[in-house]
Length: 208
Image (cartoon, rainbow, N blue to C red; front, side):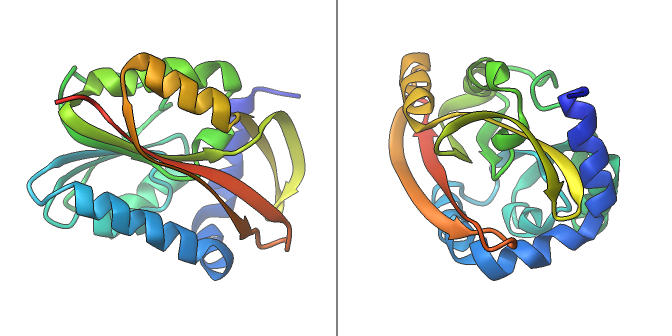
């Protein structure tokens, strides 16, 4: 296997704007539920960071009335996101190493992204998210519910890297770091391939 991050970046560069319509047909209901949970917790005027903003489709809602920053490993995705949310600030970079000042965000959001992050980088990134959040801020994320690490040769037409530490390890890490869990649920959904997958959806709050 080559460099996982190069594989992810090049894969999403090739997929471009073709990904989201396929997934909205299958995972749209779960994503919509979670977006509503996020928006209820993050009022207008908040500073919100999205890790793995993709083509910026969710950013349209997340940025509405908020100061929005999006990060993505794919240059093509960043370009698409900028076009959708001209008011946002976008960073072409790696969510596991990007730097932000401490206590600078009211919310950090990451949907379907940690599944592309090497497993040994999940918990260190959670710790950095905790530092970036202001007291009372929320971390809203979906992660694969089971642990795995490896390549999928055909993910909507491109090779793709996937990794995860699983629900139990994610919950334990978030609590150990100091988060309180407001939502921690596993929900199943269909991928465009017809395969059933399950994701762990978590809302974790930094103490006020």
